[in-house]
Image 1: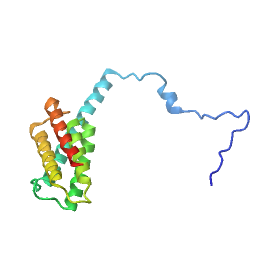
Image 2: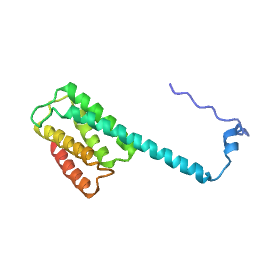
Image 3: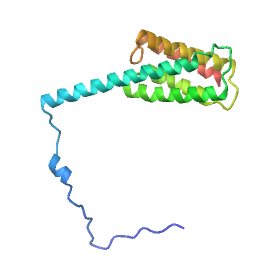
Image 4: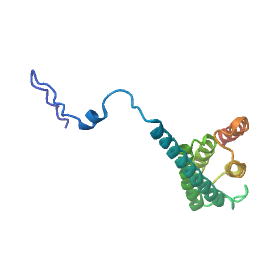
Length: 166
C-alpha cells in the first residue's frame, strides 16, 4: 500500500538551517597558495606511484594464476573464480592509476573467467593465454596508459577474438 506524501501547508516556507562549513569556505572558486598546490601535486604523484606498485604486484599474482594454463589445459572452476577475482582487483587498481590498456585487458579477462559455470572452450583457453601474454608484456616492458598505437592494435585483435567466442 502506497502512502501519500503530505502536501505543505499554504504559505509554508522551507527551513534551511545555517551551514557553517559553507560560511567558512565562502563561495566562488577555491584559491590555493602555490606552496599548497605544489604539495597536493606531490601527494598525487606519490599516490599514483604507490598505486603503480600495487598494480604491478596484482598483475604478478594474476600471471601466477594464469601460468599453469598453457592454452591446452582447461582450468577448474576454483581456478577460474580465483582468476576472475584477481582480474577484478587489477582492473580496479588499473582504473585508479590511469592504465587504460590494463583496464581493457583485465576487464576482458574478468568477463571471460567470471563465466566459470561452464567448461571453457578451446577459444576461451586461447583468449586466457593471449590475455596472460599481453599482461606479461605490459609488466615486462613497462607499457603505460593505452599502450600507444601498438596497444590499441592489440586490443582490436583481442576484441575480435572475443567476439568469435560468442
